[in-house]
Image (cartoon, rainbow, N blue to C red; front, side):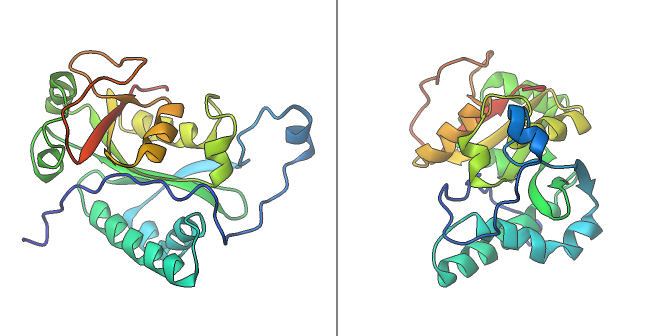
Length: 230
């Protein structure tokens, strides 16, 4: 296989109950008072250049592994596998990675714009409907291939616009002027599907974004889509 051809990698969220990781930073008093802030309070969300991504690979890999749980072997294995996938995505045209931070890295999300052909689409197993394909042809489709946030972001305030995961995915689409976000999830990974749906993602349909899952043909992946501003 040529080095520049990458097979699709379904999005997989780290485990909900990490066994090792950074201590949780205390919430500011104002956030404790009314809880009207993301479960992880951050001062800024900003993009990294490709060079900055390369410089911070260790930090990015550590945060992913720390939210994955498991023993030391599993921690290192998750980190190594993740960094391979991230390096592959970072070589795609239009790749973008956003970080959320205070005095330390709090989370990040990344992806790339896509056209209506190529290896990524071939791996969707025919589950991407006609409407997303039309958006891809017009240059308005953006693949969100990774969202890395602390477990409590997946447990708390998932439907609020200020939830950290929602903030990151919304900013990714806005920065690229995307008309639709799309991601692949392993069909057997019901936990990730449920979490993504709690953040506003929906199963891909031909012409609509339904409020309930659509029946889709059997296959290795499920295709989820996200409307801008969600």
